[in-house]
Length: 102
Image (cartoon, rainbow, N blue to C red; front, side, top):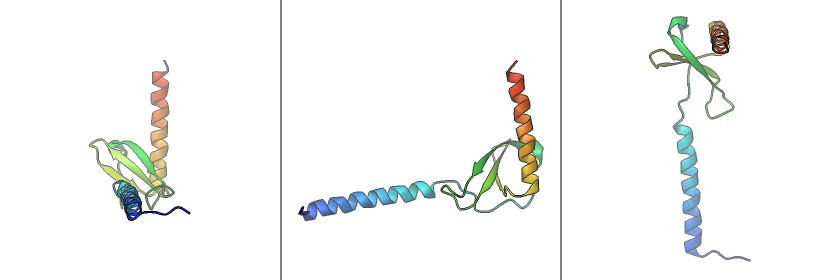
């Protein structure tokens, strides 16, 4: 049977606390959407988007639209206007990729 000295037990406890605090800090530093925008965004202001999944660090699924001036707007991926905007962005991306293939 292995016996721990008080010094080793204290060191193990300290390392465990550092790991625990480091993990929770990393999750708190995430920029998560906590709610959705109430109004649809005009297409002309949208530069791109990102997807937030509730299966990862954040609590809700969201589409994060990035505007031309760098703002971020959280939208509900189930909303019809969000689906239409994503489809429009997909078509726009396909057109751009065709231009770069020539």
